[in-house]
Image (cartoon, rainbow, N blue to C red):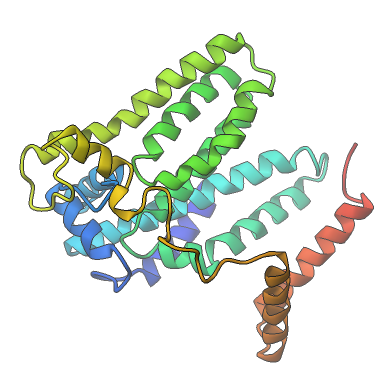
Length: 301
């Protein structure tokens, strides 16, 4: 079923993908950096650059921008495939003995995710977000794996490696800490922390690409990481962009609970007014699922 989800999603992304450079934010920078094996804007995105270079070499057709766009489409489809496996694994604890319900609900959830505005739009351009989604879903899937010890080590490695694609992956830290400390693992706590940490550092070492490649004076060399340890640190921490802050000031789009509810009501009314069938159907199934969940009619204790 993974390949069915992957193939169908990949075909959709491939059909709707930009044939060249897309007019979206950093696409041009990411394409140039991947093609020239350069250093993109901070934090450099070394994993994305390396993967992008691989795609420009291995894909024998299309222009360079098309090949790098294909990278996003591939990992976007892969993220959907792994998400299906994750939902199915979690759902097995809820829909015990209801295989058809489990498969249908998993496919429906992934279908909505794959064609959501954010996921679809970011899987057809040269950006790192679809790869980020793939790493996030895969890490969570591994933490739910039955092969607890080996899966935890692989998840730790992928977590460090994935940060070389996009640093927002750090939002997984609370969940990872829970699985390492609170979940019942088959090895001692000291080893459960030390060994995964070693694998994490191994994956995170992909950032050594920045000073090594920068020393070779590539065409794209944001931050000149090879010139000094300070430059490398500033690139790694996105110092020129305010560090972990995505906005230098308070975001005008910041929302509270009341704003979220207000926007949801507006979305519902607009969907009904313009007869947006998918939106209405989604809201209906969401409401039905919440009702059944709260009344405990579909849960197994």
